[in-house]
Length: 380
Image (spheres, rainbow, N blue to C red):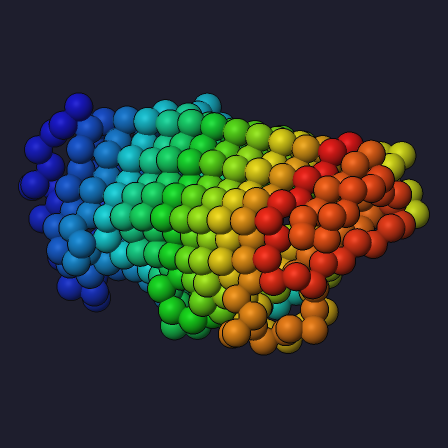
């Protein structure tokens, strides 16, 4: 599976001025195997496309930069997989810095404008994808987004930005993603990521500029572990309206966030509504979360607003949270609850401390202001 690509690689100048896209793409197209990228600053003027069976390994001092004006359409990225229609398998990308140059590749201002989506890395219809030990820098919207991706592993990813933008998700899963591990994810500076650090969006407004190229559908069997940031927007989002999000574990979250450590609001807080509250998709509400387990959170709010750290506003079955601690000594919104549950119908809600054990109707609102939640369980 390995091949010697030194001649091809050294055609790229790596001086930060020349457009090295053609040299890189020739190397990526040369066949499956290992492709080593030496130290350098490589400017890329068109989307790089990586084929199945390729192991792309960057030197720690290698930077891949999206050139000014290189991203103009919804199919433009810094890098994507080569066969989204037919599918790709066994792609590994590791090392280096990937720079989306958002100052030189802005989105249009409207919510539904044609043009660049802002996604820096995009993977669609891939089985067996691995990203590791990468710095993702200056994304215009999503740093790395996945749809129809199966059997994936993402580990050792750090996010940074010179210009933090809205809708700046870190690892963003769309529909039909399953069997994945997301581990050791870091915000490398305060305020990053500018939106959800890890987003599981089984449903979305696909006509929005940032969501073009994604799909709606189930998300299943995802393990998320070891997230850390200071002042990120939110740590984890689970967005379901009609598609299920099932069998998800999240553990080991540290730091602070402006909005929520876990946001399950079914997009009620978004500028584009995904459903009519008066006519929800299901008789008892909206969303389909099943078998969700969270543990070992030590977090605080970094901004004062009216949103709880744990925001649960979605139909759910078998959600359990253990060992959730709020760092009140540095919390910027102490008057807001640690937990708020509403728009949830359940035959049983258990909450400790507080010794709450009760049923829930859709219009009930349960709040907890305790800095430590030892256990929360919601069973439909």
